[in-house]
Length: 497
View 1 (cartoon, rainbow, N blue to C red):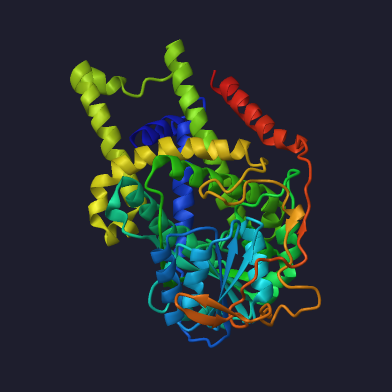
View 2 (view 1 turned 45 degrees about the vertical axis):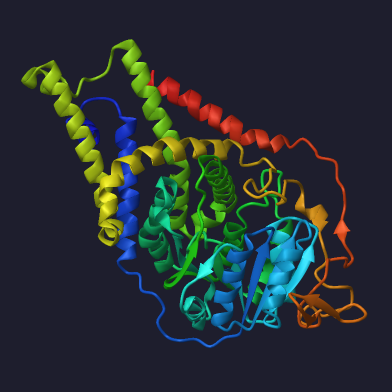
């Protein structure tokens, strides 16, 4: 903030040149101000709404105690049905947990790894008017479901999402940081976008859609390509995009709260954030023509999200070049003349630190009002977010057209063309709205008792598999983000040189 004000004053006084840091800081403040002003108008939906629901839980692997609690909390809220889609390797332990909760919980297994195929299978098997997609490590709180379906009383609403926080954030710095980011988004970005009826990404930990919309957009969801590649990651953003393009509103329901886990190791956090960065920027460019015409404010939010890391790169390059060439306006000369070299440097550093913390604190007032102790952690959050997230955003941009895998779970989707990796959810001639009939005998032992498989969808997806092998091809379009990055980086060097 201190440097920004000095540079802004210098430009206002008519001095030639534009300071990239001033542009960067101004964009940050404008983004915050727009979100703040819009969010003042946000109100969650209050009127009760009775509607049939189906909960779909894709799962690869999960600690059994956690998975049992996830299902138990869902059942307490009486959804119409819960369908667990186990994808990848067979997992008898997860099956046993599912069968503990029959007949409300049904399960299906597919050897094809990947969340999208699991979502498709679960949706085709579902019968409720509202389909709720839930991550297998997400815990519901009281009234999560009843609050989440309230927005669907408005026929214009096609999708809704919850408020999301991190389980036990006091475990360490990384979990505190993740919870802080989640809460900031819940207090500013999400309500601001919801006011417009255009939440750009309904986070996938728990989201609800009208089943009719999911069935309508499923072909595009399963096969859509951009920059020559089908990107398995960012399934929640893709479904949100398709819902918006279908003419429906997407909204945020603050009163519906869920908790989820966060990585406690930096390597896993890096993989998670890189996956999100790739998927977000891929979908931003893919959705940009529609957003410019139908959701200009949303386009501003997401394009700025791409631009900011490049601006920060320009700021760093500019500082380095000017320092090596011993040129540029010295904003601190007055302090050094007034207080001397040693005391002047102390003043400059102190003002930089204090102004940066106060600047961040102003933009985080809502979070700090809920958690005042985080004020003391602000400097560390600022430094970590800048040094950790900005390079990841740049890396995610250049790698957005790489068909790589899920990144954080063993046995999960490992990359490739999903068009050739789709299993049939039901046998030919069967109705997706009815349970799959059990094999001969019709019963299986589970946890010391028998469970009728007619009420527990127990199949290994040996159902007309459509899995085909395909030789990987070189994707020439993957070079486009690299070329754009090289042009921007090169242009920045020329601009500040």
